[in-house]
Image (cartoon, rainbow, N blue to C red; front, top):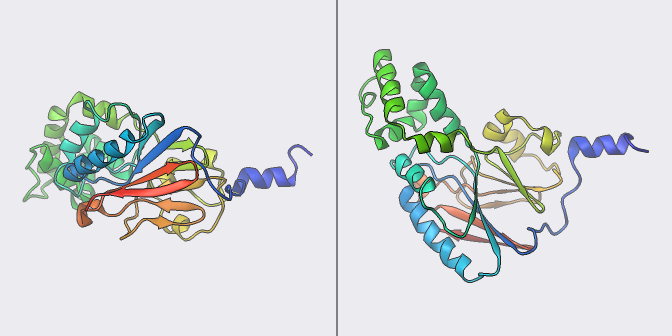
Amino acid sequence: MPGGFFDRLRERFGAAPALSPRAPDGMRLYAVGDIHGRDDLLAALMALVEADAARAPELRKVLIFLGDYVDRGLQSKSVLDRLTGDFAPGFERVFLKGNHELALRQFMEDAAFGRSWKYYGGLETLHSYGITELTLSDDPADFERARQHFNDIMPDKHLEFLDNLALTAEFGDYFFVHAGVRPGIALHRQIEEDLLWIREDFLDSSSAYGKVVVHGHTPREAVEFRLNRIGVDTGAYMTGVLTALVLEGEERRLIQTG
């Protein structure tokens, strides 16, 4: 019966994932974990990815970046320069939003937020743009000076990039997002706060979401492969290991720096 009990269950919890999840036919997907201001690792990883893609010229190639391009590492501006430039010819590119991009934009609107942002990676981002007002100061007036300076020198192409990031992407049996999803809520009903910030409620869940969720946000020493999710954040800014998960048909493999 349409709209019956089992239909409502499927809408709420999602169908069970495919036993052998697949990327779309004729397509190779590269899902890149959190970069966090490590342009050196991004350059190295992209050289490996481009070499890998060149061995399959007949396939459609899609790069999916899982967010957190900025903060913590010392090269955030260089990362955004690369991603907004003449980058990865021959690839389709999907850029997802991370909580650190949200934080950067919040500071540009509200100097007081800098008191939080400064200490979880924002200071390094400001330094990458040559902004030093907060290096040795927590004076509210210096936060406002730094905010104004940041707004004055932020390249238009960086702003356009940051303001047009997607929250999610779907290809075949895979759902791509920065942090994860709220268990018990259908994928199309997820809210931005969870997509950018969720941790334990998602990481500890064995719920089926209808698709395998590929995410970053929570660093681990190795890529986490679970039945319902794959965690791709390998803590690049600390470990030197930036990861791309490669999905083609039923195949899964990794390309990594370090």
